[in-house]
Length: 124
Image 1 (tube, rainbow, N blue to C red):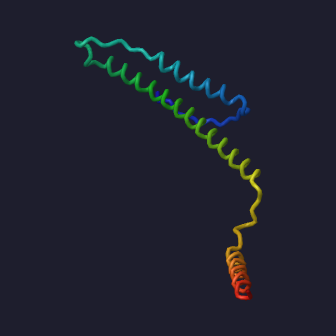
Image 2 (tube, rainbow, N blue to C red; image 1 turned 90 degrees about the horizontal axis):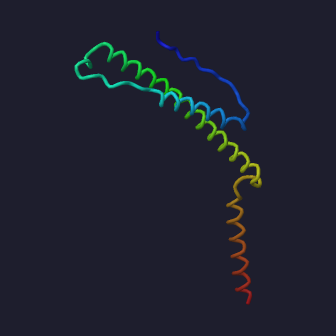
Image 3 (cartoon, rainbow, N blue to C red; image 1 turned 90 degrees about the vertical axis):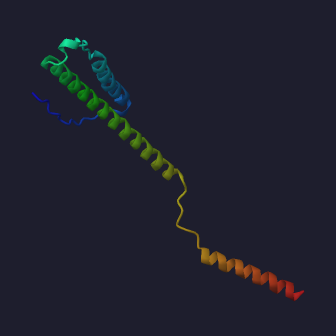
């Protein structure tokens, strides 16, 4: 019988997330370390028992890979969430800038200053 995967969605308090992720990682590691298989004798390797054993091992490895994939997605999403929080906090702390400075007005003021300096020099 083929196992169908069902996607679950649930929430945990942020301060409990590390414990939930730890539980999932430990579950995957426990399953990984529990995989055992006896080496088949050379004369019996070309048999259905060997195929069944290999299929079972591959199925369990696929389930473990799915667990690690779920954990990876949770951690990546959490890191993205924390990064977005930091960015929002940084934006709130920065003083609001009302846009780009008026470069044309600044250039005009510089030119006026230069003209005034020239006029002042010519007056002497």
